[in-house]
Amino acid sequence: MPEIVTDEVLWAAAATVPDPEMPPLTIADLGILRSVERRGDSVVVTITPTYSGCPAVDMIESGVIDAVVDAGVAVDRIRVERVLAPAWTTDWITDDGRRKLAESGISPPRTLADASGQPGSVSVTLSGRRRQPIGDISCPQCGSKTVTELSRFSSTACKSLYRCESCREPFDHVKEL
Amino acid sequence: MSPLLTYVLRHADDNLIVAQRLGELIASMPDLEEDIAVANVGLDHLGQARHFYDYASELDPDSRDEDQFAMERSEREFLNATLVEQPNGDFAQTQMRQFLLDAYQVPLYEAMTASDDARLAAISAKAVKEARYHLERSSAWVVRLGAGTPVSHEKISQAVEYLWPYAGDLFYADDVEEGLAASGVAVDPATVRPTFDATVADVFASANLSVPDDPYARMGGRTGFHTEHLGHLLPEMQSLYRAHPGATW
Ligand SMILES: [Zn+2]
Image 1 (cartoon, each protein chain N blue to C red):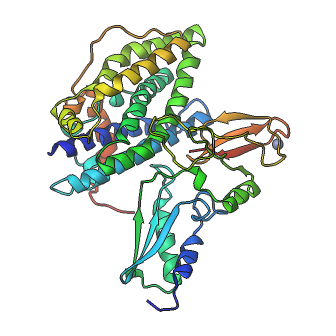
Image 2 (image 1 turned 30 degrees about the horizontal axis):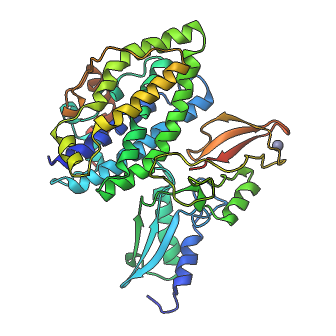
Image 3 (image 1 turned 90 degrees about the vertical axis):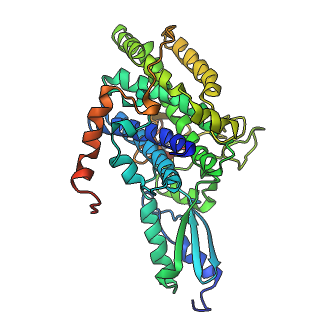
């Protein structure tokens, strides 16, 4: 592989791949892209699915390969690995990702609290208690916190459907996971 | 088959078969939101099934892949509990089947995250988050139907009566579970039962439903002895694959 292809270039290339279900966001914004590393002659890109049944993983994988090829790596030197552990959590969505969600009219997920009620990063506690989100959901159009859940599931598995009671607009909310 | 492969297939098959049942309902639910919900819950189960089949593939001496496990086995080779193969029936029966499965899968997966088998721990750490979400939703429907109109109460009560013996099959254990539980790999279903019972008691109390006191359980699914319903489900699920084995598009 050409010397010019630095680790930063490789990460930046993989990080441009859009999420097929939420194209304004990249897989890096969503925390799906876990690592890009060199192993010997090869580049190994590690991704993690958002949901067990996420149908977008195959598309993401081919997108990653295309992007790394465009960065100058031969296709037979690229491997994409999928990992399940640690399990993906919405806490991994970056600030940039949250901003892009809101700009697309999608309410970003709230941060999850750990056992002590503080923001935490462990997705499943040993006691098995579900971690609770901190704060309120607000309408991405008008900012109102007077919102009603219409359906636990929406256009994709990772979203639920809400209605704003102030401006009456329906909107998608990314479920805390 | 090794005990671990058997164990993994039992859980893969639970998820595949319920996913197939939920898939039957797509485009025929009473409203759009429920239609999307049933598709998404089914998709979660299908994804969980695929993770278990991937692992089964690595454990299998014949290295069968996920399609071969799903599409080339016959009824006697499926190891799902008989609960999940029960027909959708009416809306109440569909939601009750889901609730009983969710009430079992949440504590099952929670316990499995502590498995000494890193692969099972990883699959279940992902699946438990989905199972909790499913349980919230199915519990809400059980309460709404049970505490709703006389008609909805009657229908959900009939669903309990019909499905309860099959729910017992979820707690079947033989030397597969017992041996693997002793070595810290599997979850002994008996350890899941108290949480299942508590969830059922809690939700049924809010739904004005009574927990059946008949301990009869229709066992057999975990060793391949199914009800007639699986024999109808499989041909529909497998016919395309069997007519065109290995086809891609
Ligand atoms: Zn609004």
